[in-house]
Image (tube, rainbow, N blue to C red; front, side, top):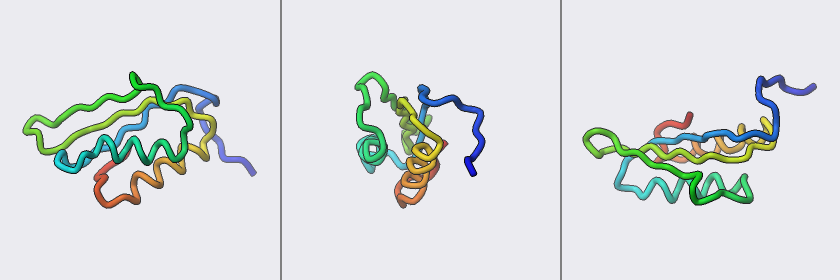
Length: 87
C-alpha cells in the first residue's frame, strides 16, 4: 500500500526549521538534511533571525525524491532537542 501525496516527485521542496540563535542552528540543520540529500546547493540555504534576534529560521530547498525521504528528514529534525519546530 503506498501513501498518497499531492506532490509529484522529484520536486523542489523547502524544508524550514527553527530554534535558538546561539546554537549555530543553521549548521546543525544543514548537517541533518545532508543525511538524506546528496547535493545541496549553496544558494538553496537561507536564514532569518527573529525580531529580537533570539531565534533563527533556516530554510533549505532540496530536490525531494519521495515522500519517505521528506518524512525521514522531518523525523530527524523534530527528534533533535535544539530544533524547536520544523515545517
